[in-house]
Image (cartoon, rainbow, N blue to C red; front, side, top):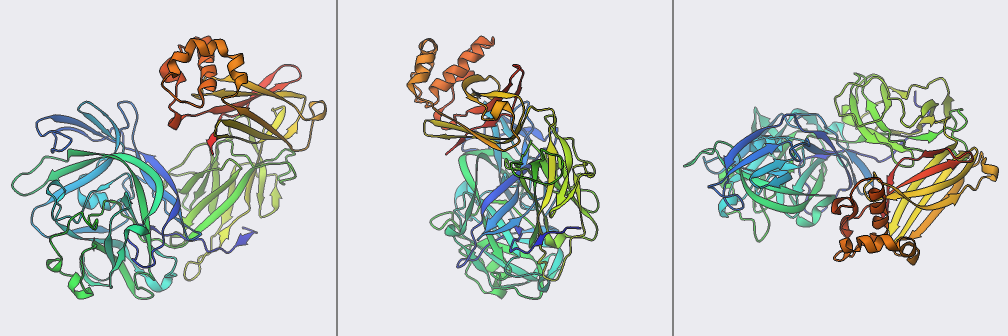
Length: 617
């Protein structure tokens, strides 16, 4: 059982609807995940709808593809924060739906689908789209996927963007007893492309079948209430006339939309005016709807002149989501256990070693999966309203495991490491070298105010290494490259070569730092730093002849990494690979530097560290 448990105000809620005009809570610090698109994905040939895609030209559309050889992906939200509290959502399950049903209310009998999909790539008349295909407004909304969605859903005027949709009813699979939940930390999240539209939302408090019979007073989401996910992508708008004078066989490409941000807005039960009773779901509609509760039930009362401007009432809804509430966070550290005692001592630093921490349910399937941070810390989570009876486990793997996948065994750590034991809340256990910690039962009290769990720690070590490397990081600030690393232990260590690359494959030595350990041996943590000016004259002097040979490549590029890239390019030439534009030149805005250490022993043997990418500051 867990011995160290702490109460927090961490919460969860998710995906879907709105927030109120006057006190909405802007989400931030989003962590996004993804799961692969179906293989093979949906493909078809069809004429363009107009605009950027000519009606007289046939286009080849391939869904679930980045390009001809790369499978696409469906993006989902894993974690986000609101006012210092953590909220979570994870539904990386193909085909999962957050609602029992989504009902589209239209003002006309004509049906038109207006969708958008993240662009994978476009070449001539071939268009690759990253997420999986879905072809109805209902399915685009009844989804956890945020890189596909709808466009201008409430617009009545505006030519090709006209949809004549007045309201969406999103009905939960199971009604919610509001008294079971803290109304301030339970609610919904809505995602939108660009975060610049106004809409209104109301809680469904009465339902017969799929017919809404009661709605609460609506609240308004304003433009200022959207919080950015910091994720941007290009998209293609698709349109299809399903009924009317013309019926299209499928979605047709219409417009190319340049990069836009995906944003979210969060609304609590309290903001929806709910502290008791039953919640069946939510309805949302245009920001120009000025009606009372009873009037809202009949869409014949809604205005049919809604336009995208001047008040941006269209809303580009990117995904729906179910009702979620407080989250339970499971937190711990993976550390370099140099003395194999399952107790983290001085100088025994956290280490990621490319591990993933997975929370596994009592039924043996993954609930959440997040990569271990560079400093060895990790967080997994479960929605408190999803907690069930039985033992939960944290299991370490070398790759992400998607929600719903069965998982019973850990992976052996990479790079020669092995498990030394576990430490749960300060209690060491050297006999558990499985990479699994059994958390036991997670208690679920009234209001789901479940305490978070911390101190779930795993020890790993590589006894074969002459040194035990602690942290390793690199930063790029202006023209200055800084590489910092620590060692936990050293044995017969002579020095470190710092090697750099522009592509992560072809490296060149850019400096050497001698061991600080007396005679190359140390049982204490030691810190090292290497600093380099990427435009310093020293590089030009050393590699002047190389710069002259390749300078033509850089005439029109003001790349601050020119010297380093020339060096890397020269290393590529030496290794038999041509000095091509692709291999050696990177635009300034996309410039990357990869760093690794070459640790050299006194006898001349050596080992390489993992490769990292310098972070721009």
